[in-house]
Image (cartoon, rainbow, N blue to C red; front, side, top):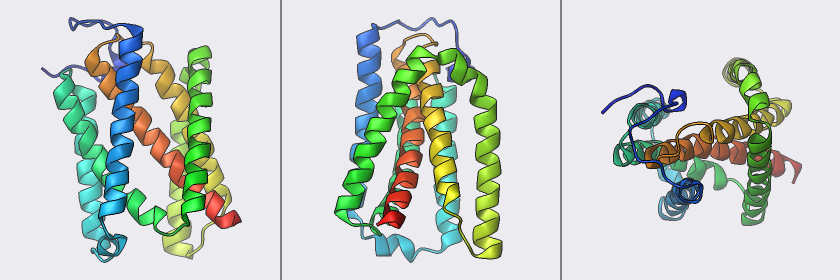
Length: 220
């Protein structure tokens, strides 16, 4: 059955689960996504990915990611949403593979620790001030689009990359973590909604991690 976007749901005929089970499901799904990423990193030679035609790679990446997002945001079936989640996790994992291969294990571990700490802090803020994050959601989206346009122009036209962009994107995704965690707790606590919320948080966290990794790598 296909319904409206998951985060617009306020009523449901699905079974409501306890707060503990809801949060545990979100956590388990996040861990699954990170585990898949780790397996991809240790099992695939990044050179194989780098040698793929970049236009083919980007087409497959965006095709898989957007298809997955469509599945988990529109479906109210937990299994379908989980399948959609994995269509997002795999291409993200391939990007993580290529990026982390450029840095030492020490820097990667430090980036993981910082990302974990920031994520917990922003989830706490999202729980305490959900209305604030809801109010700034539009500004976050506009800021992200603007920064990415500037970044693409610098990279592909000017051939440069300013360091402030990584800081800006990291700050934006900090806001998104607070926003997505806040709205995850404002929709009916069903198994499907837990999977959907985990998928949204996963994308926020991975994007934050990649930017923190670049910032740390540059400082070292």
